[in-house]
Length: 206
Figure 1 (cartoon, one colour):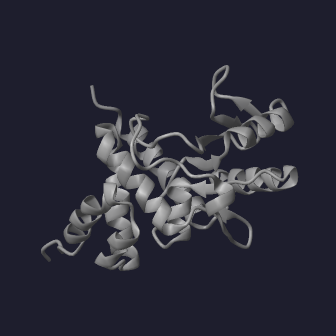
Figure 2 (cartoon, rainbow, N blue to C red; figure 1 turned 30 degrees about the vertical axis):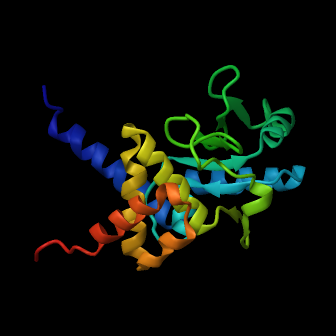
């Protein structure tokens, strides 16, 4: 049974409001990102913002409902010791990810040394944020080439992660990335980057 029209309208209005807040950088996701970055810095824990927010930093913005952050395993343990019960709770007992209780936003943690996508061993793995993070004004961000590598490795290995491949395609379009970016990527993902780069050059008919 389809939802009543007023219900659809109300949901659509909420989507518009959340999208406007996100792109104006005043929504709960941005507030949660600022808060977790400040707390990681306060503890001296190396980190790198990843996922959709990192893509926005590199030139392709899309709405997201959570914050992805790369930590070392030791960094994750230190963060939990410092902040569980003080603004954050585990999603479930023993989970890597946490929830920001003030802003109601999930903080998804990627752990250095783990493998993207299906989680199975592959030539590309999550790096140590201490080695790769790019220092910004308020955040430490995953560098562009690393972000692309991880998204490609994820999408290649996990059929349910096709959005990661679409993110790379849209990033190519938004920023005008050249084909020779492939030369800077791990051989495991080069062919897929070139394939997506070619797809990104095709324009929809007017």
